[in-house]
Image (cartoon, rainbow, N blue to C red; front, side, top):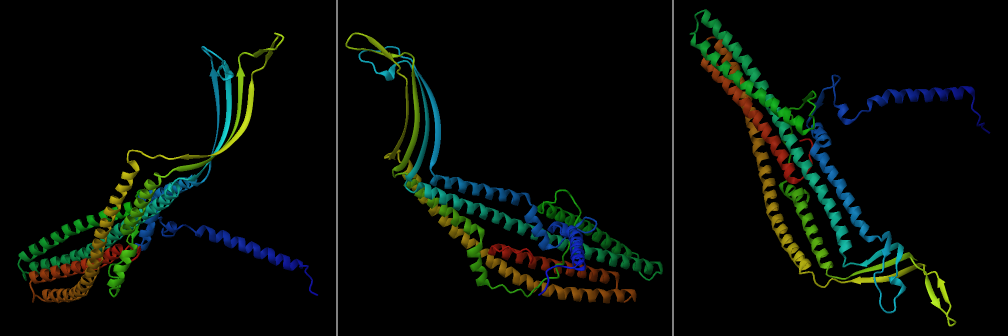
Length: 470
């Protein structure tokens, strides 16, 4: 038989193990930061790629946060409508003073000077109301779904805006780098032209041409640098980074998969099922249908079960008196106190209300027909968006392949013209033309990459798919 008693060594081993575990937790917990803190570098600067930027924007954007409050409000509306199924319990108190002015003929005690106090507790349960309570509750649930769709639409719009600004930011950043390389090459060409001029191997006009091209490149660089700042500023705003904190964005337009194959038929089907605008219209049709049913339900009688408990007292200002057969007068106390309860069914039917409910239902019929026509029009436009984006993806893919080859050819041509210029076989104009062709080829390549990525973003948006990273 094995003893359950632990030796001192075993106890000490357990204590050491627990202490080591506590130390491990203490060391690890400070590193379990939030998603935003994980993206921060040692200097406190945020460094975000496209997916991280989109997720941070959805977390911090003020409009999205406001939409979340709208959803919470609609949840409360559902709970409020649910209260229509439950009984209504009320209590009340009243005090009435009665001062008799005149009386003729036999007078009832009810009209003598008195003070009346009444306590009442009532319970009313609606048994039938033409399904208005049920339809009101169902309408509130549908409106809650509308709030969710409204937030989802805002999220889709925000994702598209962030992706568009992010991709444009990457593009102008590549343009800036290309222009910086261009300026370095032009500076080398200008210095070479100056050297040739000093040795009287070339005319001074070559230096002037190089200076003009260099100044044009510097001005273009200034414009592109300013565009880069603007796109970054917009990105910060979309991400809710209004405190102007340091943030950098990482990514490479060239690091994309050009072989992404998206079946057009599947894209169209997904757009029919997931596009928020279409779901929102269908949701509004359901709300209008419920409004119509509520209007019809109000034409029916309302049946309530009513229970009441009453405590009523009457305090008369004068006492009553009677005279017996012997002629003697006797006085007595008139004051009364009654405690009773009542139960009953109350039926109320509003036969005529000026056609209010009839025309309300009729207006909902027209509203439903209008929404159905809007649905058909929006569906046609959305399917057109999907087809157009799908076509632009293929066209941009072809341009990426072509412009990549153009960049390679233009670079080889520039290198060759640079070598020929150094050997005084080519003129400065030929070198500048080669430089201009290379810069234009790089700009076309960057634009083709941007168009491909933007077309992907547009297609996912048209499909109603939340795609954080392209």
